[in-house]
Amino acid sequence: MALDGCGLLCKYTLLMFNLIFALVGSLFLGLGLWLRFSDGTRVFYEFDDFSSTFNMAVTVLIITGLVMLIVVVFGVYGACNEKRCTLLTFSVLVTILAVAVVVFGVIANSRKDEIGFRIANFYSIIYLLHVANSDPVLAVTLTFIQKLLHCCGATGKPSLDFAKETCPDPDSFSDPFTMDACPGVIVDVFINKAPLVMGLFVGTGVILVVALVCSIVLLTLTKREQQEITARYNPLTGSYQTLQPILSCKSLVGWTSY
Image 1: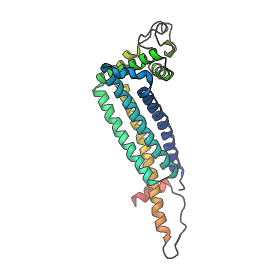
Image 2 (image 1 turned 120 degrees about the vertical axis):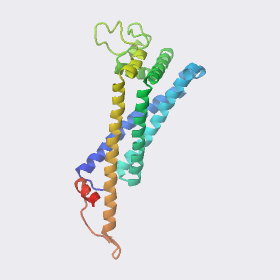
Image 3 (image 1 turned 30 degrees about the vertical axis):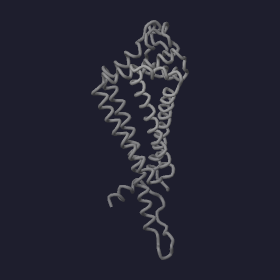
Image 4 (image 1 turned 30 degrees about the horizontal axis):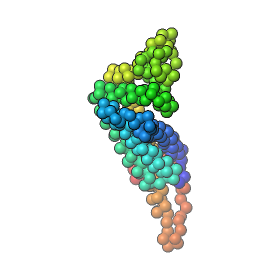
């Protein structure tokens, strides 16, 4: 289907959205599967105090990664081939994800104490696993989290911490000797910086809405093309009359109002 600038913008926006979704979904799924089936994590399933929180977090990672990759499959195929059925399925999935993000954001805000402690507990388990096994995947995970939050391990002392190689570079003279411990920072983010957490959910929701709007635009354009093809078909000659070949987003408003 020939698209004008508006349609092409929506098409490439969807492709960029799905590329980001594919990267994040692959990371979630890969980390979740690694934590679930790695030899070093089996010991945590033997202790009830750790297994519930750990297993729930791993399950969330795996399910989230799978859902994101499924959305990517429909999104990429629909955007590249401009198939209405695939785009419609993608739109439904993105709508469900947007609603889920809003609901989880509300839950995270209303139960911020509990969720903050659970995530801090999950971080502590990842930290202990890395200290015990020197796992490179867990080292990368800890490094990302600690650089993002500018914290250092369970002690807050980069020079003495058991996983000091994962701690971020110091920002001040005192950082090599004392830095915030990550479990406390995680809890503080959820409890005392709730607007920041809500902003993350709102930002994710906005991105999903943009992808949904672009998908709806492509859906409408493909529907108009099918209707034009039907209108051009001459059953007597078995051929199509040649009309305007390019679909325009500007003319889309007039078409839908008609």
